[in-house]
Image 1: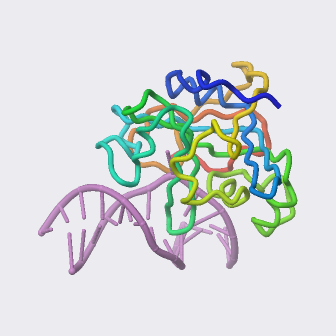
Image 2: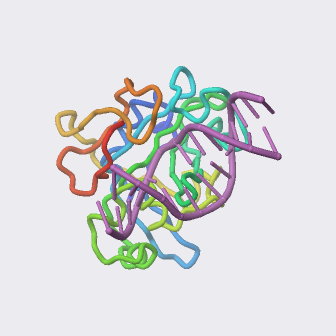
Length: 196
DNA sequence: AGCGTGATCTTT
DNA sequence: AAGATCACGCTG
């Protein structure tokens, strides 16, 4: 497996949301267990002009890692239960991130199933809250990055444009008009959530 | 379709 | 200090 270069993340956020489709997200646990999934659904969030973005009003304690260098990981807690995983984009001190909404499980599946308490595949990581639970990603991961030995994005061929679906983002109430959700058409691991 | 669950942010 | 909101997931 070949990791993507640092420059991979240094492109506009919406473009990055598309480029990440098909790439592999991997976590290596301290005991050497490898968890790996293919990114099949993403959403772009941009600090400037996007009222659905946590950082649209500026930097706060919660969203501060969104202002870090591209390739940083932004993890936050919501709805009293769920952690969300984002990959930070845009130059340092600018806010932007791509929410990872769904992964197709590839490796470490028994660990993931144990984490989730289920034994199916298509509902294992088909949602942003599900995939963090499956990969045991919590608040301690906020602010880490994809350049060490724990979290990696690995190369895989780009998804052809005709296989990429685009639409409104899910579960938000503002900036509904921005078509910044991207997903692989027909992939069974894409989340079942519907746009607002 | 309805609700749990708790941090964060806005408004008083 | 109180109230609203929330980049969700599960039951029914």
